[in-house]
Amino acid sequence: MLKIENLQVAYGGIQALRGIDMEVPDGKIVTLIGANGAGKSTTLRTISGLVKAKAGSVTYDGQELLGKPINAVLEAGIAQVPEGRRVFANLTVLENLMAGAYLRKDKEGIQKDIQWVYELFPRLQERSWQLAGTLSGGEQQMLAVGRGLMSRPKVLMMDEPSLGLAPLVVQGIFDIIREINKQGVTILLIEQNANMALKTADLAYVLETGRITMSGTGAELLADETVKEAYLGKKRK
Ligand code: ATP
Image: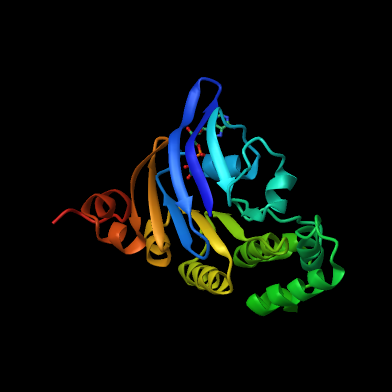
């Protein structure tokens, strides 16, 4: 289990995370929802080792990850798909996927996982020699997810996979998230698209200006009046 306790992060004098606690049990889809600037990206970036925490702890199966370099977090089995579909524009689809496996030495395993990613995303296979910069937005998001999978993570963290995508493409991305999870990968998903995220998630947390204000199953939060009003654009009855 990935466990976050009393995580505090400050950018200069600005307190971005004010002591958050979260649990991401193995095999589950967990989502963190919240408005712009609530601290969602900061949470993922701190777990990944990209942002330094002021206090707290992040453990995976009891092993402390906070303060460890990014590679150590990746080796522990935690990978992040960055926001904004960041792919290497001047590399091909296949080269991007290979880049996701940069810490691995098991050549056969890598080949197998390329096939795995191609099965999940047949579109990427068709375009394996295409430069990533010329892919459509949805295809770039698929590639970003595929590259994340190439480290064979136990936990895949995703930063707003639905951002800027057409509704039909968003549906496809969420279907894939469920499929990846079914195949044994734990998912930690941050989203502004609270409706889709809560429908997909086993467990959900609400983040407001650096604090967790609510948690429950996805279904519980979907039915909650406060959540409906604040995040699902529905008026209180
Ligand atoms: P969004 O949905 O808009 O991406 P978020 O919930 O992911 O928002 P964060 O990006 O984590 O929010 O930002 C939390 C707060 O920390 C914001 O007030 C933001 O301006 C601030 N912040 C984030 N990164 C930095 C940085 N590198 N330097 C200074 N302040 C930062």
